[in-house]
Length: 504
Image (cartoon, rainbow, N blue to C red):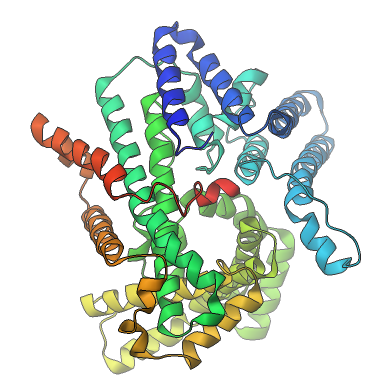
């Protein structure tokens, strides 16, 4: 059941009505049943994988609690817990590895063998990472183990966030899921408002830009130079509007049920560095990697020994930064692999990790340069320059994300450099990419709308509060504008075929 379908809207409306009609103490049961029914629409057999992750993680949490109570010897207790955690993580990430990455391994290391036609369960990366975070949080005593399996299953499978996140934390989400919620008209209005904004971005921007992106990247040998650059810029529009729009739909649906999920975007294209970009883009993935991979690795004994060695060899400052740089490269290698199986994703992750590592290592050089040249690093001009520089670096990374292979991506980068000609701006090339003049005008209108909203948010405006302060006719005029613009200006999902991150 696609988030973009009329069936999903009817399903959500029906569940919301039932949710607020039943006794409040069983509202969470309605959400659990709705979540399992929703997932079963993708294929009843795929529900087995979701239930396997739910049960294995739940059991691990209980065993961790039992180990805490039963083991008198501290070392025995710790080793038992680590064994439990390692076994559960191996099981769940093993399933993810086999289904998502095994064919990549077979193709590269056993080319004579026939790849297996695995069926990838929807959202498996999201619910696997969320479940893994729960296990570690129980171990680190950041949250208590859930004793009721069905309550825990709701945490893993809550249907709005199931397919594309955000990656939730048990300590913040569980009590919201199980708590009673009274019907609130303002909350309903806010939820629908956010859903409309999400669909506006998806249908008007993402799916429209996606038509040209598909044409350019599929037939890359026909194009080069400005067309390739236009393709990657349009992909920025497509990916942001698709993913951020999808998050708005997810958060809007959750809000209708009285549940506030974590924000996943914060004006990422106003970032002043790649590090800043990843603090604003797919925020819950970044914080997951920071809390469960970066910090444990940085604070490990072997990293401490590596830090001592680097300080002796390269001095105090460089020796302190090198371990952090190494940890960032490893983290973003994992981020790249998380995005998909293929060398292009590995390079995508390494590209981001190396840029962040270099930024940390070269920071003294930039400081010296600013001092010598008397440039104010906090000036508005430098701020704008950093935003532009980061935007360019981010768009270069898309060449490792969108094409069908790493070879294609490198070929397109080369085409940008060697096939650069301005004639494509006047020879009709852009009108042969599947879009008409009016489509570019609608794209421009949509981009400007999103830019203005993002700029207001960046300046500290609470858009939702600003809308709430308007009179009822003004609010309804805005809602009706969004509602009717979607079918009138949208592409009816011709290019999208669903949200991009739902494939993860």
